[in-house]
Amino acid sequence: MTDDLKPVTIYGILALQGDYEAHRKMFESQVGVKTAFVRTPHDLDAVDALVLPGGESTTIAKLMNRNGLDAAIQTRLEHGMPAFGTCAGLILLSKRIDGRPNQPTLGAMDVTVARNTFGRQVDSFEADIPFQDLEGAATPVRGVFIRAPYVTEAGPKVQILAHFDDKIVAVRQGNLLGIAFHPELTDDARVHTHFARIVERSREKRT
Ligand code: GLN
Image (cartoon, rainbow, N blue to C red; front, side, top):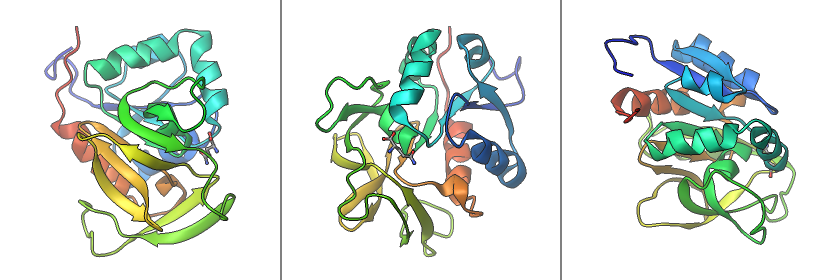
């Protein structure tokens, strides 16, 4: 599919479980781009990028596997589809989960994540997170962490965008953006806008 055949970029939002509505609201009302919910491989065909929301990564993985959506997403990711995962979405994009070798993921980002183990703050907390590469980067992002993962290891192609308490909480690898917290639950659209720039610059090779 080429740009001249498809002038409007559609941001797919994986809508099986979790806070996908919050992402839709952020992209539609604050970033000003068009979105579509993705629940089937057919839905995936109609979108140019994919957002993986926060939620429960094991549940989302199970639901994706029922109709082959996981394999369809993997194929698109291999061809360079831009993707943006928050919290459970970051877990799903990662290649490895610390201590859980059998939990399925899409295996796209060369990172290891640890689930539900944010020191003593295992449940919810908020913190101001300095974030590299954002417009207005001098102002930190408000990080809403809900049983959040963090990145324990990042491969050489992974750019680290943010830390909290010496732990990696935001990463980018090419067209992939993974955030341990939930920018979609604030009214600061800078992280979503950052992803929109990645999408604008990307050129996926689709057959
Ligand atoms: N703890 C969840 C998981 O491991 C992620 C939490 C979230 O997305 N807010 O899937």
